[in-house]
Image (cartoon, rainbow, N blue to C red; front, side, top):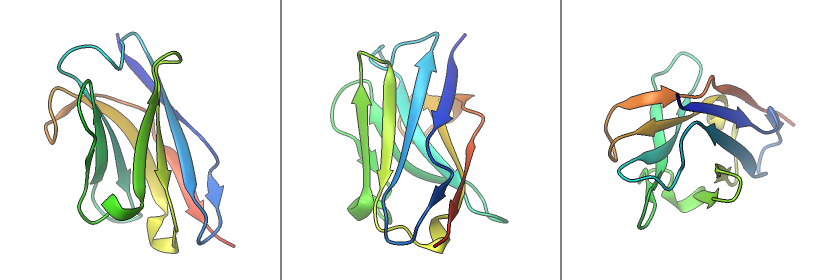
Length: 120
């Protein structure tokens, strides 16, 4: 089975860049048809899709976050990463990586989530 694990610092200062990594096991991030996404959930709010790394082609990003969001991959480590620049307290929340069968479709595998706090 596929497992995803988020990692990275849980605390980031305002204006800095948040960097998180998702390590995938049991499946390849380059395998056909799958998309690898970052989703976040601010406290008391719903899930927000941030962007997706497709198995091929260009990345997809939420229009509201595109200007400061970057998703990259390291196929040798079967990892993909998130960089969110110029963070503010509104960026705090639980960040998840997840797999889906298509862009903006349901997710069959999720990481456990990692809490991110934005504080000076």
